[in-house]
Image (cartoon, rainbow, N blue to C red; front, top):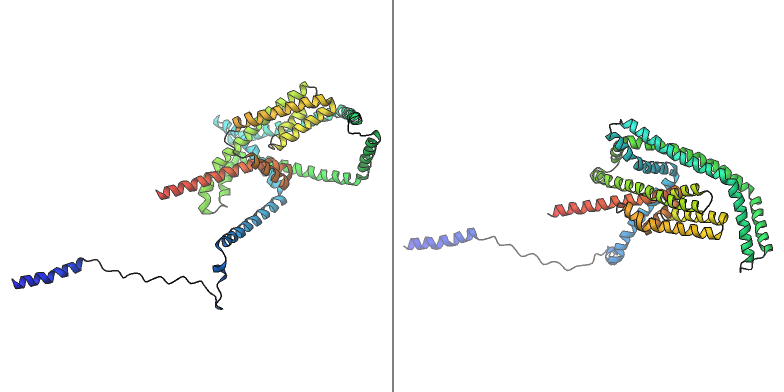
Length: 399
């Protein structure tokens, strides 16, 4: 019995010792925070600079790097602006014509034949419109010159009778000054004519580049896109490839919607000024159609041109009527046509439109102003797609 009790008393603490969790030593006390000091005993500059200034400096030098990259990019685009604008114009024309090629292929038309036929019809139509405008202007230039001289005389008589106290001698002095300025600047006019020849050569080169680029994009667009993806980092190719279809849909919706809106504007304003008897109604309507591709600014410029022609040729009353027609059509465009036709495919704030048009015009002139808004719309779509994709990936990873 004593042996059993003794064995029980010995075995019990042994079993307890085997099943007891190992004791963990307490963590050593953390040493007090000591400011980093240099060899001379002074505090390190990093520990002295406030946190806000350090963050501002970090953000600042990154912004400077981005600004430098943007500046270099703008300089490169300015150096090769002819190629860039030609390719951008080819993209816009491709977005306009590609649905026609797709429809022809659905009717079992060979891809090459569908591409050539669509591109040929599109460029022939554009050429006929340009020829018609030039023909109308040249056919009416004599009558327009006479009406312009008559309008200048009417304006002179109105100024003489106006309450601004302008005398005939003062008007003659201004006219003589203008004549002297034109006569003394003959060298500048000659230089401008030579510059015009250079611009014409660049224009023909750009047209040829646009035609060939459009043909290749219509025929082999998907393969060109796959080839361009090879220049992207391997980790980002999947995301960029996924953003391609939404970006192309945005560009196609923008081009088609702008063409429809521009056509309605041109028809309404052209009919209005034709009914009022303003000369060059058809060329002015074509100018309104072309200017609609520069949002906001183009509508104002083309409307002002129509009002000036009406004022010079028909007088103040007709000019006021043309102004009312232009304002009415622009209100219809801004509140009905663009929201209904473009919808939510192109979501760019009017302030962004104005700033992008101004930036495009400063960088590459009229061509830059034309391609600025669709470029901003495409970038906005791509950024939204990538941000949504990143948020979805983070949500899936959290689940």
